[in-house]
Amino acid sequence: MANAPFKTNPTLTAIAIAYMNNEFIADRVLPRVPVGAREFKWTKFNTEDRFTIPDTLVGRKGQPNVVEFGGTEEAGFVQDYGLEDHIPQQDLDNATNSNFDPRGNAVELLSEIIALDREKRVATMVQNKNNYAHKETLSGTDLWDDPASKPLVTLTDALETPIKRPNIMITSRKVAVALRRNQSIVKAFNGTISDDGLVPLSFVKELLEIDEILVGAAYYNSARPGHEMQLERIWGNHCSLIYRNPTARPNRGVTFGMTAEHGQRVSGTRQDANIGLRGGEAIRVGESVDELIICNDVAYHLESVISG
Image 1 (tube, rainbow, N blue to C red):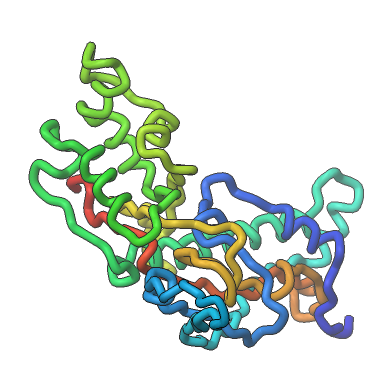
Image 2: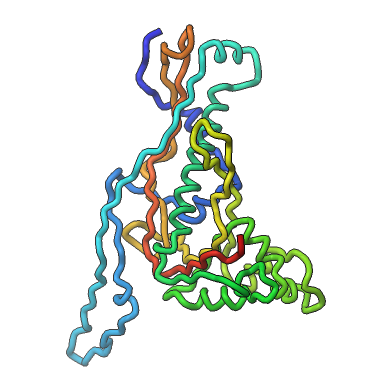
């Protein structure tokens, strides 16, 4: 059986594009925006240009003042992220008379691992305090799982600090539960009748006057290959408040971050005579993306908001 070049398969590509794990929030934290080429330019705007007030008075025969909006043009380059799964011809033959689709199953599993890797990359960027102009680390009675803490005060102060008010809150499930259990939050929900319970996140969202609270719940195996599995949370004990602009593009609009995407996720197959005795098919899934932090002035990062 001769090897053939990798060929994109529309059916498998459709499966890869449609795949979605609801536990992953990366696409809502750093939304995907299309770019026309693998290499692209994005603009880091000068903050002062948007807040400096020029003389706007125009004389009867005068000309309006001319202003220039500056910025730094940065170079971007999408990276390819992909995986393969090898299916022996025997498995393909056995599936002919069954409802099981080994190719589609492989695409779904590969898509999930690729998405998990992206979730980890985005979480690492968003939880890195060095990517923020505004940040603080909580401790002592300010920690949200401390009975004396007042997280609403911390959050509202943080929301009013950046030059543009954040509209999205990003945190882990563990932190979200601690926030919903916080005595001051519960009292606000129950009208001081009780300080015990679990407050809906929708109530917290309304109190903070933000558009969305994103809760990361995914796990990953941090052990090296060959060692016993060690599951860890991808999203840690932190809370990030960001301004997300859905209309922003690499060279237009202010937003905390985005993901440049060249083309769509693709999938296809190639014949491989080296799989088992009778050969088989290699199933490949991949995408070309680049995660970017565009403006660190429109966000606030709260480090270690709960203990342990």
